[in-house]
Structures are given as C-alpha cells and as structure tokens.
Length: 402
Image (cartoon, rainbow, N blue to C red):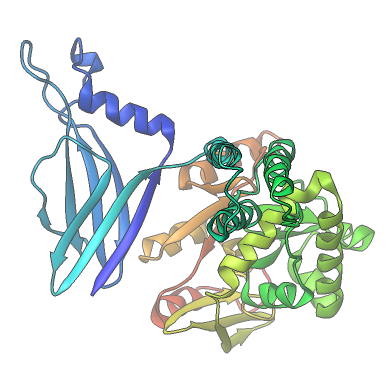
C-alpha cells in the first residue's frame, strides 16, 4: 500500500537551508554545527514517521563544511533505517517498509503573491493566443476561472484578485464568451453551520478580550448574538441558557452579512473553504459515558477512530482543559501538567493559531502583573483511550470548584 504526505516550508527557511547546503561558510560561526539539525517530520498510519533532516558538520579549516541531508524512518518512535547522505533537502523521500511505501514530498510553500502571479501569467499567455477560439481554448479559460474561484487563499487582496478577473474577462469578450466569473463564491448554508457546530468545527469561545461569547471557525473568530452574548463570561452558561437553534441562527446571520460586505469577503471565504474541506472528514458519534454535576466523559467516534473528552458543554464538542479545570482543586496549570505527566498529548491555541507550552506558561506572569496577554493561549486535549480519560476523570471533583 502507498502512503504519501507533503511537507511545505516557508521561503525564509528554504533560503536558510539552501545556504547551509550550497554556500561554503567563511568560519565556524557561519557553519551549521555538528550538533545542529534542521528537521521536519510527517506522520503516517501504522505509527510510522519520516523525519527529513539537514545536518551540520564539525568545521574544519580548508575542508568542505557544507551541511548534508538524510531522511530517517521511525516506527513506534524507534529509528528503523535512514537514507544515504544527500546534498538536497527538497523533493521526494521514500521508504519501503513492511510491504508498504511511505513517501514524503518536501516543497516550498507558495505565498498568496505566488498564486496571483501564476494566474496573471496564465491570463497573459491567453491574451497572446486570442486568435484561437476552439474548444480547448475555452476549457483552459474555464480552468483558470475555477482556480480563481476555488483555490486562491482567503488572504488574497481583493483588488489584486479583481485585476486578474478583469483581465480574464477581457479575453473572454474577444472570443464572445461570457464566463460569468463571480468574485463571491457559493455561500455557506445553514445546514453547513449546523453540521459544523455539531462536529466541533464551529466552536463557542470566550473572546480573547474577555468581553463576551464569540464564535471560532478554524483559526479565526468573530462576535455574534449582540448584547446577549456580551453579557456572558462562560461558554457553558451561554449554551445552557440559549437554545441551540438560536445560536446557529445568529452565527448564520453574521456569516451571511460577511458574504455581502466587500471588506469581509476574505474572511468569509476562509470560513467557507475551511468548512467545505473539513465537514466531509467529520462523522462524529458522541456518547456520554459518565457524568458529574454537568461534567461529562464522552466517547467520540469519527469513522474508525475514537477519542475521549471531558467537558461540561452538554454535547461532547469542546475539548478545553480550561473548562475541565473548574472541577480540579489544583487549578488549570496543575491540571495541564498532570494530563501531560500521564502521557497525553496536550495542544495549545490562541486566536492567531497554534502555540507552545512555554507560551502558555509565560502569559501567567502577565496576568500576575495585572495585565492581559495580547494573544491568550488556551490548552486542549483529546484522550486516546478510555483508560487515559478515566485517570483524569477520577481526579476531578463532583461539583464545580470555586
């Protein structure tokens, strides 16, 4: 069986790696040292991992001191084998193991500007072939239309995107063909909002400014619900007192408003593509296995995979340790440490994306000084087994701890 993964690396890091591989260092300070490594990993089924590494050398005057590369195969965290030393980091790396082929493609991350430039180049090429009006030419035009509507990242500057569409429409007019290219793509439906809410793709959070309940989709969030939502400072209270249909309707209304406002179009497209990409992957079945007060221990089934959550949101969607810590006498940070100590994978997020354990701890110094972090970090966990979840469950109190 074949398994493939793609690792994308930003251009700054690409330049850094290529410098170590191709430019002879003038001294030891310019050299990637023998104890230094730049590495990226990809995870596969069967507990397989491939790590691609740029490895340093011990600097020796008069000798080549260029870094070198290799890929290493791990199974269950143990190194199985590695490739021969190479002089290139990017491209294809693969291993044949236990009847399967595991392949990693290391690629340079395309920026929004790169994608826009590609589209502009395609349009320019079409302008040079205006005399061709056959079916193939129309198909190419249609393909570019699809690329614009569906593949341009939500961060794209609207004015640049409009320039590309205008140029493409000029070509279409010459061949008397109306492609009807919309700037606004198909809308988010209420059904998508319902499914997103029920599967945890659409989550309720306390706003990073602690000024009411907000809606989070992917890495972005927004306010909804007006003054009513602003009066709450706990998600569980809001969910308990506001009907589910009302919450969904209010979220849908805000998204509808985003779709009609040019200034909010980029944000709207991000939510649309995020939901479209992930809704098909989420097939959750949730079953509450135990309760304490309003706290529940939930089994979450997603296809053939299962995980376990402890939450007081009433439907097993939330996996926030912050909410769980309300039932732990030691407090949130102590509970995070206890969960990690027992072999669970805790991950951290802020309103700007993923964060680290150190960033999570650092923010408490700001709180102690009477301030508020610019981007508060929150901890989350999905327990891999019932036994691991039950270990933490047994540490929690029956009632809310003040």
